[in-house]
Image 1 (spheres, rainbow, N blue to C red):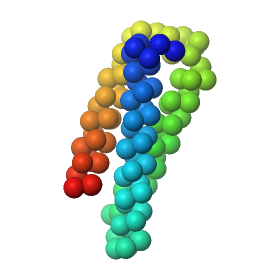
Image 2: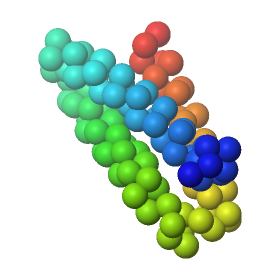
Image 3: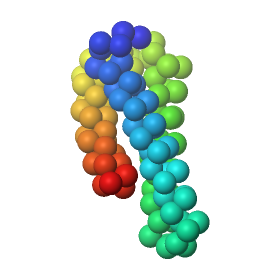
Image 4: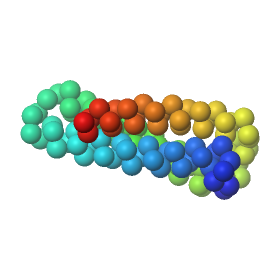
Length: 99
């Protein structure tokens, strides 16, 4: 996989998203234990689902790089665009949570 390709960049962004989501989950679990808020429990579930989605997508691209889906330049650009949007959302959420 070429890291400079749209698909390669999407995989790298997926890894960054996974790291940020792990940080968020850790903070929210700690806060849930302290406060017991159902909102925090919902946020833990939200981060868990997105974390699984990111890890599955990264694993898929590493395991299936020779498939038509992974090699199609248009698909790579679309996946990159969606990954960037998710990175923006997760980064903003991380910033607000850590602050």
